[in-house]
Length: 526
Image 1 (cartoon, one colour):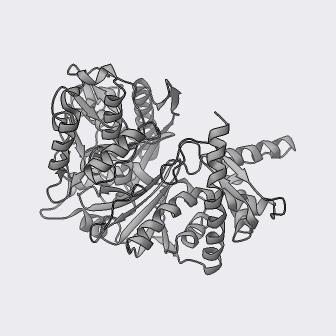
Image 2 (image 1 turned 45 degrees about the vertical axis):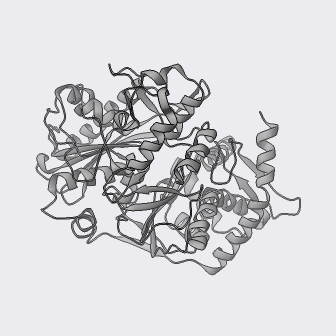
Image 3 (image 1 turned 90 degrees about the vertical axis):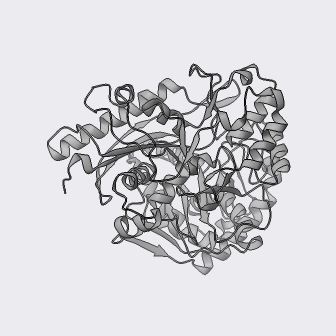
């Protein structure tokens, strides 16, 4: 494998929903080493959360795993990198007091507990504020009369918190910041009028102006500080990694997905499909209407992006595959995880295009896009539906895409937004062809998957760190990715199959009708 000077490499770390991953990349984007740590959210005190001690244990384990991989591959220890960056799942609520003490448990994007606040702010701003946004969590805490609010001195995201601890800098990349509070892309900063409006609404409930609580907004390539001695030890307790390494602005997983798929230019987009699923489309012009199903965020360099975010994607599918694996094992057949998923996905291609009338809801948590307040996974069918393994497998995969389709129809049909191609990445695309083919049919848009798709967010973060380290004078993020990282990228593009497109439309008709059943399940199973 090609070797680079360590000071020309970049390190990307991403804290995802189920894994913390680290990737080391060369100056041309080549993946040199990787590491990972598995973790899970907890449901405590009525909120989905992660403990901050687990954050550091996971980051250290992922970095240690990466350093070991590097030494095994290149025969030398990893002693430094040229630049690094941290990304994480967006949104949520992490408040701290002026001494840096955490004031409330981390409330993640998965919580759907802020509907009154989100609706009130959306109406006040005339701008969609989703439930998972940080400002919705803050205003809901005010509405709830929570005591800790009066002591808040800093409010940030998970990526912003980790970056702060590593560098001492209270900053945030603009893409991640756009999931805290609305951004004015013309100035690459929070929307000033909306900040003033929130301050008037919050009144004396906050100890200062909202702007003073939020991280400073930075765009890709800007100086976001350097690794401090204390930060270096947090990342690498072994003491090898030195202080002083440049750190790029921390980003959210949406921004790293855009970087990892070279979809930061207008009329491009990407679909990230793993524990959650979201689509990002870079806009040519503003939307005509405010849609509660559509988030307005930005690329890592500040361009406006329409985003459809769904809380659940593969969790229900994973559960069914695990169950079928247990069945196979009980019958005396042991299959690896890869074999199980490959068999299940390939079986889905043999199913009827409309799943034979089977309907599945994969809702592990509430789905604001379809107005479902809480999670109740549900499989439903008529007695005369074509119930077989192939149709069941296809229905599971369709369920991973259905809520996304519901939201994107608003973007494509009502707003006449045009996208030339969508780049797919994440766990749904690990089995070749299947997820890509079905998604193209579902959305009616060509879907491409690059060979680098499996690298995902941490690789995208390493690329953003590379832009911070290697950018030339006047070089935009779009040109950096297009000309220096993806110029010779290999991949495949599948155009929509008409039969798949019609079949998915039929599946969606049943799906929308059965939303009433899903609501009833939420009401009945308390």
